[in-house]
Length: 334
Image (cartoon, rainbow, N blue to C red; front, side, top):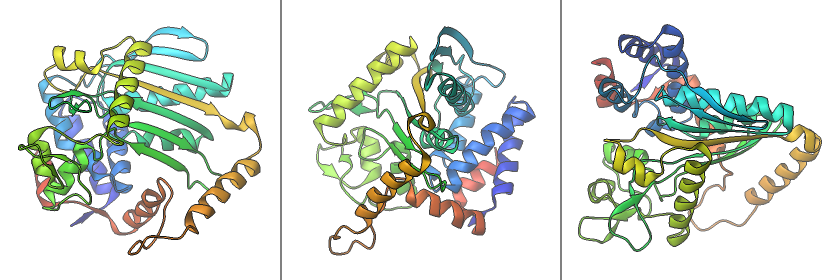
């Protein structure tokens, strides 16, 4: 089934206001969930919404909380998220990083004690739409084994790089440190499909494409094997250090589920570093080279990061957002 953008927004706003959010906050958060769904990132849009409502009911997300600035050092600030709604807090933090970048050339906000931001790529698009390049990431609940380990002690720590293009078709890398995020594996599992490549281990220690088995074993495969493991460790330590917040092991020790996270959002005002024409020429040449590279058998097209999201957005705006009927019925019942 498909649901229109307006219908989905209204339903999310209804539920969030019933759970203690002001109309303004409910609409702001709902619009982020809907935008993620429009872009085809259902795992961190419509499919994730019931989980967030559960976290609100458990008290992990505080509907009336506001982030506070704890330290301001020119181009960088440290904020306490105060367990406010994670996607709103991250949006405001990136807006502040962009504002600082317009003043100083570069700006950064480090967040502690915050909640899941849903889809990190949203904040990359947010910066690129304002003419800024951006890098941002978050740590998570322990859900990934270190390379060679059998127990999940690291986070899959989503990492985003955004580069703006004048035509609005920005390049946005949005990736977890695991081959597939848990949200994406849940999406495949819900559809009864195997992953396209091996994504982790089953309960017997064998590599598998079965997402349900990986979720059960809690042993996803890190990208680049030991390199993904190292990146996860580095990103976690960096975020916790700069934000003054919890590291992934501390989140696992001190929190019942995934909350009180540490995040970093950085923006660079690239307009100070050359003309739009120069930037577009470099990026267009790179994209053209990718497009014209000989393809493997069976590969229809080579794409740059976020190209599919841009196309999916146009399709879903025109035709409605695809939603699993079971998920939508669950949302309607909330």
